[in-house]
Length: 219
Image (cartoon, rainbow, N blue to C red; front, top):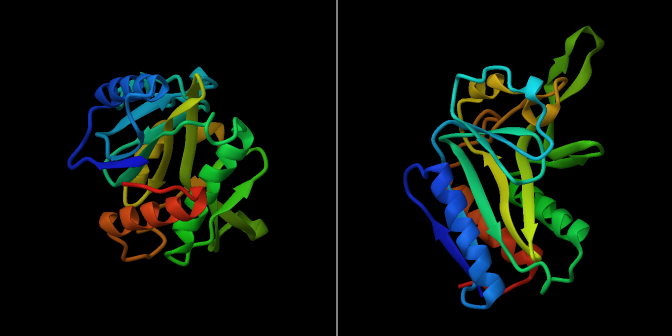
């Protein structure tokens, strides 16, 4: 069984990490169920294990948290739905690549429920959308913006950290970092794409698409 938790308001990042650490240990010990935890954070930057110092453009703008998840710098803040994923990957086949692909499929399916085509890109982490209405300079090449980020860690085959989908964050807040080390593309959100979607709508879609993607029962 997978427990779903939705926290109201803004969740302190350090408290979230402490919760995940304990839950992962309990899952591994067999004393707690797997868990999906949906939160929003106050504005902050996180530095993953591959973060480069030069990609922190404005180090004094928001709190910066060093994170044990994979990836580089990312932003969390109000209007962004973060889904922390505490799942037993050992019980799901011990295939890390497949697990990450399932997380990507989950995000893509969630976006599709709002008629948004999310795509993977080789060499770029996260999920991307094409923006033909915003061509790149005089070349007219199609612009692509990032709408969701993925960064996980495994401890004894239990995952934590997870995904984030931009519902309606302040996109200007991303300017304080080079998101995931990528400079030639931008960021977007569901609202920025013109969708009248509420956070509750997004949560419903996340749960429905999780069940379809991972084919597991939930409580």
